[in-house]
Length: 315
Length: 256
Image (cartoon, rainbow over all chains, first blue to last red):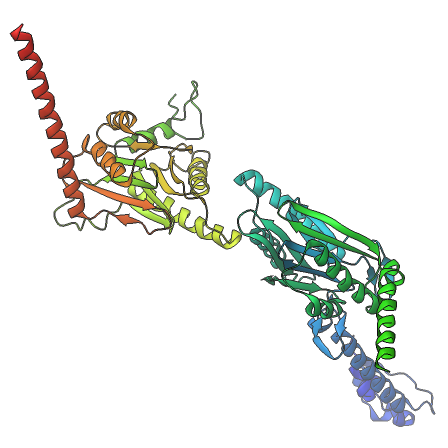
């Protein structure tokens, strides 16, 4: 819609409002018939009104542009809107905490179970560890639909590979299949930060991180989700390669617990899986709150008691 | 009505004539022999007499699909070139997707699948090529696969295609292959079977040695000639010994 007349009222009226009284004498007849002239009541201050309208229009347009800048098309504020306020380059893979690490007896995966939609807790019982096959597991962080769909698709492809080749697919190949699949949808709004873990027949345990941009990294330890920073804190502090399965389970459990305690977008039940030579097995499933008021409360009390003891001895 | 016009048509008695004609074309090509030893695979090909001015080093019947996969083909050289190119690309594609080397069986299956595809499409003819693919499994066992223009593939202990008399070479192999062949014995078996249908001399044959985790090795002309001489001497000695034994037996008969 052409609103340029607001800037030039004379063009619209055909006759200047101030020249109302002598209209017919000033304007030639031919021009009068062409332009839309009408009587403007005196005292309306048409020029001032038009100027105000034009200014308001520009203001609204500026606001709309700003809003558009924060829309989906802006990569900083794209589908994954949970950005770190101080550094927008850090984009959290939505509300979740998942972690995985390799150790002497295999690969451990631990996850929380909260699904959040902004500040609304959609579910507290999401299964964030996806069973791809008897010896392959995947974790979910980001869009629940994207993760579960693509990892189920991966399960299908892995099974076909097994039937065709007569032997199990390697973790490297499985994670490559997933990464190549999502790479084709790059830029179209997928949100997925997942870990693919398993045990290869020849090369042993393997852990890969795959995300919606097509990143695929082999590694010893990963954590994904808004609570990942808390999990890394605990993991980096207490991780060592030589651990029993029980120690590893406890470490994974503790790291997720701390993340769920501090991160608003993580919570619910903690699930811990471990993949060994024989395949995967679930080693722990417990409510985070039960742990907080149970095992870890006892630990805190014991630590407090010890501190009190020490102080007494020092005195 | 002739049923060999379009290959997509079966004949009333269940033949795909174009495929069978392709196999005939392969039979007319130079002889190719493959033998599986205990720790090696030996491929031998007949080198047909080249024109005087042709640089015969450039006409190779043995090619590498990947570092660990070697193929020898019998049939139309041009068709083989196309197939080998497809196999090379597929091997790299497999490495890219699976981060691992393709197995011999996988590549043999791929080549066979490609050849079969050309027997079930309109407007194309089958490849006039049979190929022998050699390599090793993950745990170091030698493997030899054979594909044909129809698209079938199978593993062999020893096989022969093409040449003046394919049947004779196959029979020779059947009589003489054992599963305890060392590298030298396998080489000798390949040369001996080729000598059934090929003129003697190192310039009439080419031998490739495939070993686990090693680069493809072509037998040098001098070594080859030496081995041929050795074989011929052995054969000559054996013949002489047989003659003498026969004579001795005859004399004994006469003496009675």
